[in-house]
Image (cartoon, rainbow, N blue to C red; front, side, top):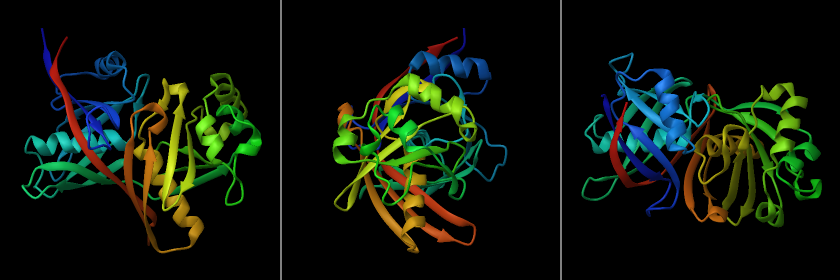
Length: 296
């Protein structure tokens, strides 16, 4: 019988049972890919991570990320949460970590309190902002269970964008639209079939402006995530895309997500223009929940 230690935590929050849930296996040596996928499906969280030795000893660790049905090249709350777990266990140089992920190297800044305890982390998306094609308003509105009039197009149409291998469709909506949105699985399936640019995948990141902040919701039912309470890998392309539209050199923006789910989350983003393109970061707090062992 093989035993593998795991911990669970809530990410992008300062309170237990808020934010986005994550399971982390801090030492996944000996697990094969099929076992990792099976464990992720068993936990039934939006993502589960598995930590392995780095390919380059200059980096902290290699991290593999699985949702319920597939491995992911990059994801925000798994990267933040895994970094928090590793830092609490003494990994890294005290100030930050370097995580090898499929999409590239993810650099981590650790957030510590006055006593030096790790409270959270901020990660840099592994790739510059990449903007794909616009998506048809009516089809995207249908995916969110909305009428087309609920989609705001004054600043941009529904837009495919990404910065780490997980393109999201960014959709500005009205306040009423954000509150009323409900994913329609059939509409998601029809949209993917009709839009080859989506590559068989579709996640919607809905947002509206709320003073100096944004309110957001994310739907990805094709991967088993009906709604996600906090999505760092959608927050970073949104921050970068909004900077792209504004023409500014840099910006900081807070995003509130998970309110409608009863799991309030705060994602703190930055974006800046560089010679390589627009680069974004996202950070937040973490809270421990469970620990145990899986037997295989």
